[in-house]
Image (cartoon, rainbow, N blue to C red; front, side):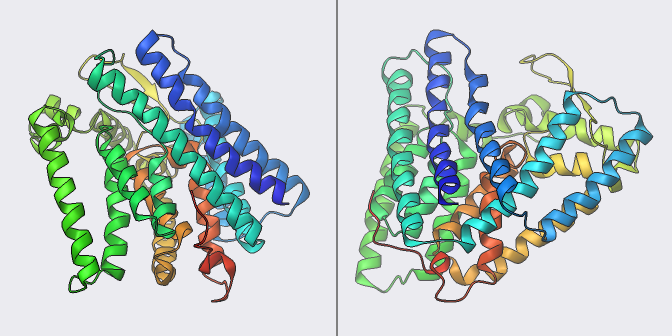
Length: 392
């Protein structure tokens, strides 16, 4: 069983190397970005093969997706959705969620000191790979000027969650700074939320040590922001702060095109109001009108906002039930707020609000399965107490 778990975490490290594909695209103009799907698909295969040997866990997520997938089939027949790759894509997302949660549950239930050590080691590799690729991007963007686009995604938010759980403050600070200068706003926001969670739980301003750390970090942060602002490195953040809600183009820039998807889904659902309750059905799609001419007008079967995608596919009722379940886990496991797996779920959940990760990446669902087990785990169970002796 442990070999399946090792393979999954190894593939998370492999996923970080997809940043090289983005660098090649920026610098050489060779589009190999589609290969980013390889480690994701391999992860799903590992999870599915695991369940050929071991039983699937039938909890709330299993029955929630089962009921609404059956309903979605009926809805797709009612609306006359074609059987296409869109249908396959939607089914892929359903299977990923159900099997991912079950895999995470098994991982937590069979957690051992050896597995704890291996995961921390892989997270260390993930940091060095992500940081190395990010530094290369900085060189080509800030120094050589070869790359014009300001924005580079990475696996650093997940790394930060584990570093915070392991109390690795120096590496956490370095990772946050790397994120800040990458130009990606949602990973930075999700990481800062984790920091605030721990701050609220553990910080004591009257403690000389805490006060000194706060002054040092605060000074470094202010200095870094000021330096970046003076050299116009923060235009992407400025576009968010200066957004004009009555200017469609301004709103599009500030949301990185997400506004066009929101409008498309809104119009699509309102065309048949029953869709708000039952969704669009498997294989459904909506018309998206890109206003800035970056892409052609087209029909799309997902959005870059995971929660909005579930509203589009399964409806508001399903989405509210899913969110209620998630927030219940967050509440029940808040006593483990310093736990790396709790923080990792928080950061991937927040990231899903700004991206499509819940639809394509099993990591969130595996972490959800881990946290579902933590609710019933004993207080001395290794999955909840962890091992803080691991080093990067």
